[in-house]
Image (tube, rainbow, N blue to C red):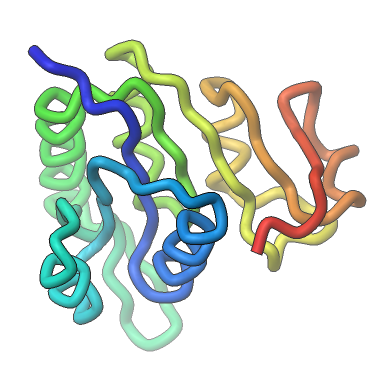
Length: 161
């Protein structure tokens, strides 16, 4: 089965927007983008990008986030099937909890995982970064103060975005 060289995984909205800005700055184009369902996805496909959708892990009721076991099971299966289909060599992750299952599946299939911590995380790591740290090749933080919260895999090279 052919491996996909580089996959970008992120949540829709601000995380996706930041990920696309980063790819433009780096002059890199992923072979596939994996993101959650949202209205901004159709425009990416119209540009000719290979976009795959993951269902959300959580349901929102106002400001209350609730884990739905059925959605979670579907998400885990979909993430696994995408990891098998794409077999990425490298995964760049920006985003929240929805990216974690795919990253773990991809790592089990031999991918190198790189996570870019959200710019909003100044003094404390996100839950996503804490979960991905053990499997990451590198985690890029955008605030020098955050380096002390991670081990040797954390890198600071100034603001990424």
